[in-house]
Amino acid sequence: MAAIDFIGWSMNALVALMFVAIVGCMPVADWPPAVASRADILELPSSQRDVRCIGINDEILAELANHLPELDYVYINSESTISDEGIESLQSLSKLRQIVIEDCSMLTDQSVSALATLPILKELLLKNGSNISETAFNRFDGNQRLRLLDLDGFPQLTPKAITRLQEAPPNCDVRVR
Image (cartoon, rainbow, N blue to C red; front, top):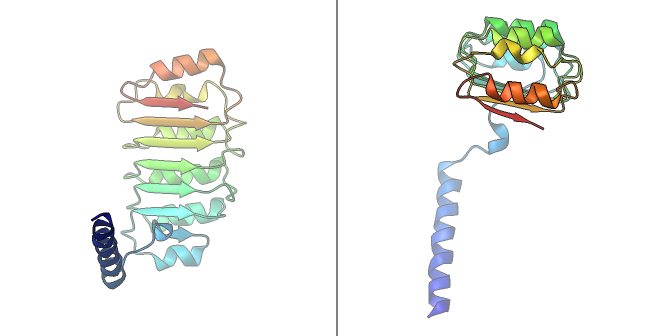
């Protein structure tokens, strides 16, 4: 009886896989589209809402902000070299709700100030912010929009600053590692 159940389960799994193969399924690795150059940006429709930035610089980030005004999600990988100037170009993206920056080592408090001005930013995930001070995140005090602030690798954040940060933005899950 167990063999019959296994065969039935196997057939169901096979049918499901065939359905995916016939209907088509975009691999997760293709979402969101990757951008590494100006040419990549220009291939996307101006209505594009989400992108992964791979190895970009400030100039490409500014081009991204200019060409894709509808963006609500931006991921910037650790191979990118972004400075305060690049982050400031994101201020024009009024619909930006989530930003992930894997390497903030070239960013300063000025970048945090720029990000704090985004009108509907809900999630901010940052890594490796060695040049960002513990007072930089005071700009989010009282911020009603932010729901997640995830900071990993910010050596200037003291335990006292972390405690204060976790209490400051209301309704915000603050994670510091």
